[in-house]
Length: 129
Length: 129
DNA sequence: CGCCGTTGATTACACCTGTAGTCACATCGA
DNA sequence: TCGATGTGACTACAGGTGTAATCAACGGCG
Image 1 (tube, chains in turn red, blue, yellow, orange):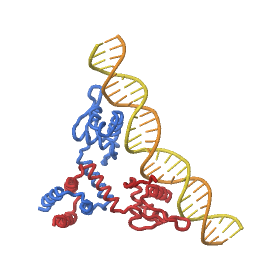
Image 2 (cartoon, helix red, strand yellow):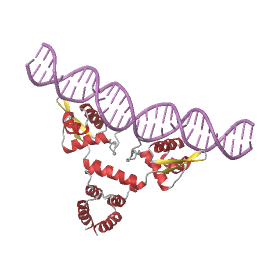
Image 3 (cartoon, helix red, strand yellow):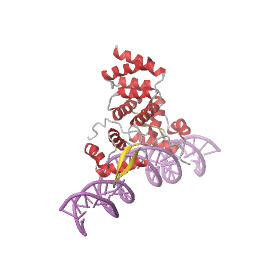
Image 4 (spheres, helix red, strand yellow):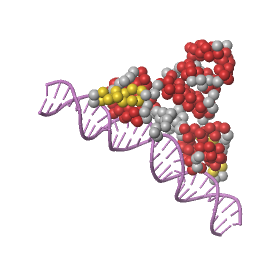
């Protein structure tokens, strides 16, 4: 049937992403448990979290497993996948797909700590070895 | 004077960003000239470009200087500023503000070309010297 | 057995975005 | 002078997003 690969997962909004982070850090969780994690910080109500969970289910970013009369939610896409996609999108949009200029930019903005530099140096060595 | 610093420039959408790129690459331009640059590629009509220009003016991302009976548009925010903001936002959202993990990610995704690596190596040396 | 709270579903609603049509007006060319 | 044309302003409208209220049903406590 027509279910041909929907390879590219649907776009996840900012607020939805917040919910994803919770589920990535721990899952499965109920709506109430997710709310425990974010409602205070973001000043959201439980209703808001439910809406976001519903939308994420629609977008097939998370799964809702029935557990008694409620659902347990858990991520369907890996964090690495999402993060990779977002990073690539940014590099694409702003730096013509080249990562070096991004790096240069972060460097200029002093967004790179000593630790970052050290870590990157190590990574570089590994990659060039 | 209530005009207390609106430090953070208003959010620029994807379509709007496209227009910004044109103006960053050359300005000032009229609406029609901007359209010449993007309408074909994006399949936009002139009307669309005008709307986007209007919204960008509202957001104070560009200025509209009267020139006879039309306007000449030019960026008010520097590309570097925008790019820096977006980059920082991403690093913030996805990597807890640390740039190294982003770099690691790009590396893993093989989003880094040999050239990128070489360039970054040079940048690194400069920063550590 | 009946009520209350919990839970997902449905609905709401304002604002943003993408995309464009329409309109009134100023001009330039004939 | 008069009409074609270029121009910005205003309007439009569907779909996404942020934020939430309301509703109906189920299940446990008294």
